[in-house]
Image 1 (cartoon, rainbow, N blue to C red):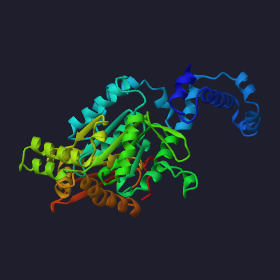
Image 2: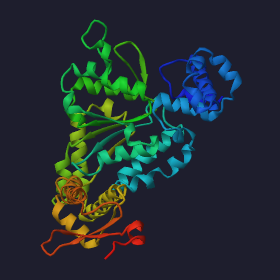
Image 3: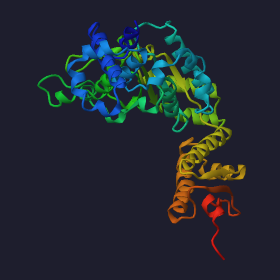
Image 4: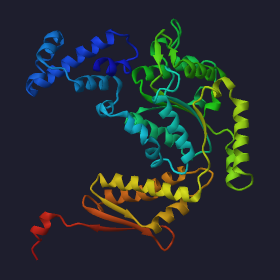
Length: 404
């Protein structure tokens, strides 16, 4: 039973009972290998491969062995395969809000759609969720996609990203699903289908989807409707364990006008949806779990993002044994210098990289700081930042002071 549950949703390229037999075979080999002394594993690997039946008889195959094999096949860590999914789903919205600032409505819509799907209220066989994210640059669309991959599949590496400005001609469909036999590139497979065939648990991000050729959008209609695509080699690729996210800047100027008070936000949202209706067929719009509008970030939102980004810098230098702190005044300087309402949160990260990480890197390379150093960042009189360094004396120097 565990084999069916573990392998059924993870290896979509092989039918039952073959996939269960393969899974038991691999799990048996894994169990037998764990019973060997480390030094014997290498010389006995041929024996294991040639006599897996005996290996299974001599070793007990436990659920964790099955989980390890499925993890190797799919790229999903064993910890995720063994976790209770209900805990992640119940706390999904709150955990997403820890990373995505100022977009509570968007986060709630996405979390609720995922919850409905996992509870079994959506049509079976379709992707876990499909979303159209609308809004200006730097408001959290991509960050929410990354956060979903991290929360549901335990790693941002489970995010598969496509820049749709590269798929603007009719030949783009073949690039995504693979060319048929006798066509150039047939052996390479499709850029989309190959990635999902090998890693069926993924968040798929189609950036700037409005730029894609209409034939590509028609392909997406089929994908959202059936939950499967047939690649150029005739193989069926299952997308039922994926989340599909399409992003677009359509109508972003109206949201900016609403934020500036030139029109109401309600009117801005209506204008955005009018553009969406003109550009995308109803067949595509109606197959979406949600169409989500991201509003421009306020100054308070950006200040919170500055804090989050600074925590990331602190964690980065902590891995080198360096303690870093930043005062509220320093955070205010970062916000003041990086603030650009047109580009949202993106300038914050760039400013920190250029003006904090670069300075810290120079200090590290020059020997001003190192393991055990403590660095505090504060506002300087010239409106920039100042770095104060305190280096801890090592135990060896403390116990053996240099003779005078």
